[in-house]
Length: 299
Image (cartoon, rainbow, N blue to C red; front, side):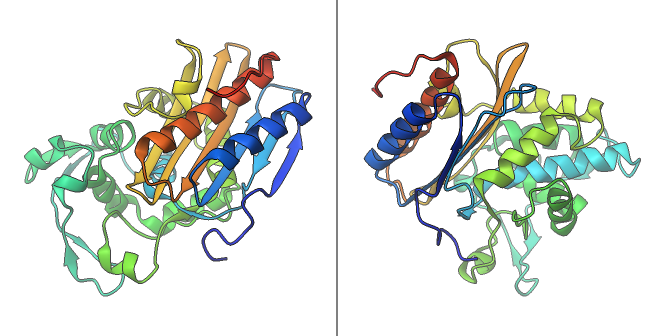
């Protein structure tokens, strides 16, 4: 399936306040300067059955959201005794293209984290690399970890967990692969399934899933889904973006100790970051308020 070939508003809804939420979600998406939007919402509270999908089968460039299945693979390997999180990896900035094995390097100016580049030639623990990969979206940490576990293995694990159309092919900034159309891709549903597996303790061992949630709770980029929620709401999430190409946010939200839900919003073609943030923020707010019966007009 090619990227974004399914109509934008392929929508299915099962919710107590379905008509109101449906109309407001559609209206807010229609206002956005986006080429495509994918949304996946599912209440994980026992017996709820509340769900909403908008273009959830649309395929997008995954950007940094593909770092979630890489993290899952690392923790599963830890559970299996294949590695320890305190094992260390030598930091290097030379990687091989999946197209022809030619070497390439990451551009510091294109990475959201600069600290790891200061440690080239030194050894850094897998635990610290995972933290950098998820919380500040370090591309260098990601490529080092993908070399350790293998993109194919992370991809196979994602499929085994039910994210069966997610594709993890390679590390970040492989320019030759990008130009050849060999990209990491995902749907909103895929990411929602993976987050639900972490939340339910089935993505890896229950203890490892709790560790992954703790890492996701320390996410530093909170302009999307968290910004649409009341202050203090617990959010465990991973963002991903390529300037003027895609902006994504995939989250587990816990409004209370007895209530939690998965929300994933993927966007493509929004030129201005603030417009992308506003769309994801507003959709997050609409979903949250629909659960409380407090839907209001979008700002």
